[in-house]
Length: 165
Ligand code: HEC
Image 1 (tube, helix red, strand yellow):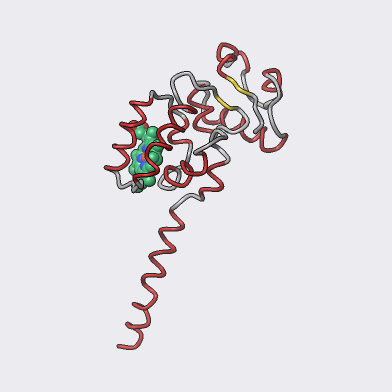
Image 2: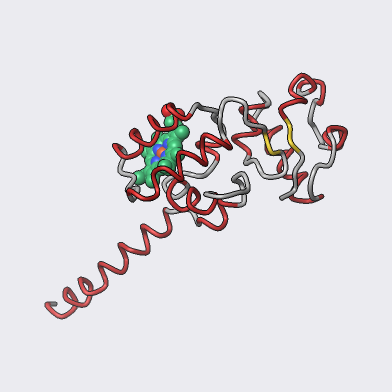
């Protein structure tokens, strides 16, 4: 009786650690959805673990507003080392600032859905098409996405960036 209790407790920290790991999202995986460039990996590591990258790439904010988000996240338990603070804000303000493009070959479902005002199903169809067929090269490629009403996104043409890096 005593023995089995001790055996169980010995493994408790390990079980807890694996539960926490299971809840987190992998930085390398999430980085693929983030705009390429300096700070990409850092932001994936610090910001795409409690939630996915789509939680914050779907919004466009000024530098000041991103600073407010940082404070908000700190209140929610994000532990951001002092040295990482400025590079993270700089990356977010540059790549997800008020006039930042929508990188259609990287953006996660949430970002595509929100910025193009598509239903979740249509946004998923865009990403599924990309996963199966590779990068979108021109706006016309959207016509090939099954179930997507291209006329709905025509007005957002200038927002789209087709970079593949
Ligand atoms: C300790 C966990 C944690 C970390 C780390 C974290 N967040 Fe969050 N974040 C949350 C929670 C909880 C929410 C609210 C629930 C949700 O939207 O998933 C949230 C929501 C958000 C939202 C949406 C807010 C809204 O009002 O809709 C944004 C934007 C955001 N986070 C950005 C970031 C950025 C940028 C970072 C990195 C600096 C970050 N988060 C790191 C926990 C975290």
